Image 1 (cartoon, helix red, strand yellow):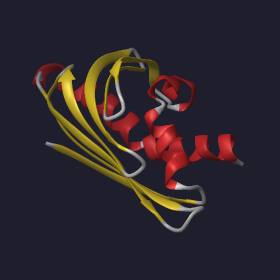
Image 2 (cartoon, rainbow, N blue to C red):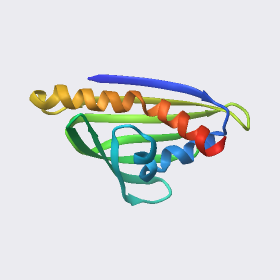
Image 3 (cartoon, rainbow, N blue to C red):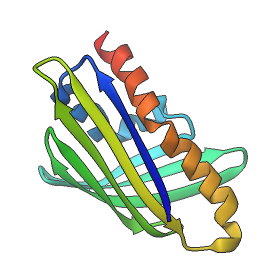
Length: 143
């Protein structure tokens, strides 16, 4: 099982950062390696979405069901894709009205060991850069 943990302190409210995280369809605009994103189903407390990743000739797509708890948490669970298991959580901790700590925790295992090394490298690369990409996007959007 692979385990990724990243966090950052941001000079923006948890509400603003939550909105960026939950705007899945904008991910291809600023997340390196994300070439497509589609919301499949959504309501106030849940979203199902598909992400398409590609880098160095390696491609993968997967779908998750995201349980939404604005503006504090988004929990991701695998619907389909090349994973045996995938679970993730974005957590936002308000630090006053104009700052927050954002944390990402992802745990995953690939279902196909043969194709796993290249796919794992792609997913690790994209996942490890998610928080950095989010920080950069927040600065672009909110100054």
